[in-house]
Amino acid sequence: MIVGSPIIPVTASDEHCQTGFRTSRLLGQRQISPFWSILAAMTSTSAEALQAQFGLPGLAHVSTGNGGLPCIRITAPAATGEIYLHGAHITAWRPAGGEDVIFVSRNTHWADGEAIRGGVPICTPWFRAKEDDPKAPKHGPVRIKSWKLDAVEAIGDAVRVTLSTANDSVGKQWWPHDFTMSLRATFGAALHIELDYANQSSEPVTIAEALHSYLPVGDVRQATLAGLDGVRFRDNLDDNREKRHQSIFHFTKETDNAFLDTTSELVLTDPVLKRRIRVSKVNSQSTVVWNPSTEGAQRIPDLGDDEWPYFVCVEPSNVMDCALSVGPGETHTIGANYGVEKL
Image 1 (tube, rainbow, N blue to C red):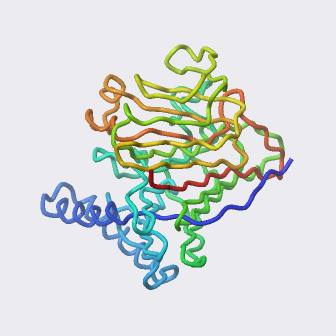
Image 2 (cartoon, rainbow, N blue to C red):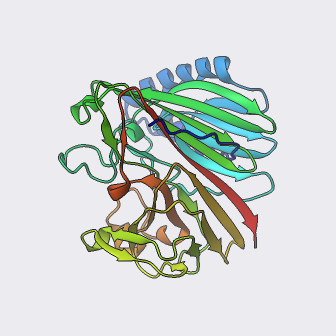
């Protein structure tokens, strides 16, 4: 069965890309390695060529970002935003007149082959560690490779960016099936994301997937998450035992839960920042909720020990019991829409 559904606009801030400019200059001053100078020059040329082809004056600019990685900065009337070719990774979205709605760690490793800590990582075709190969990259290979920029379009007062990738010889070490993937991110008054998985192999494949969105909060211990009342879940911190949640979700300890058989909208209420973030899902049967708390954060080298109170991951997904089969020649689309309202 081919599953698909249209989606709409998004926003983000350009602070991270601008930070990238500063980082590149500092690396040059320190003269860390001739390799990085060569890489920065090559990437700069690539960014300049992409800007010439895809740039939209006053709306979208392709630049060299953190770690010399190309990124697209959005400056639309409805929002600002940022997305990297590396992993097709959204790293910022800020609706006009509002605050940032995407969290990125200050300790992120900005490098090819490394995952960006924060933003909206794309996790597929497996989730967490690959069960039959612990050496395979966690959450799949597409979040740690460069994608192809296909289009940058003005959509009313928003901007939509389209990126694509395909399985290659590196990815086939762990996933032998041919596929193409496409991401469409619309930065406007709301953020809209669509991710296509097109199975180009001759047999059906079972995939897991998640849009691993990091949402900033003033203090996770005071935040609440609605939309999961009565939903069964698997607790990754308790050998994935099945449990059932009741009422509003409060973040009182380290959390890593996969809520199953749920399509409900999620509402993250933040009394500190005085806002609600609404996450609606398209073709998503599960929701992963994660916050590492104190001990978990200390186990993560690219996350500051003191950063855990300031984000929560709310992830539209199809994982574990909700992993899905995509037939040969078929395309599956998962989507998410993010909106913000003041309390």
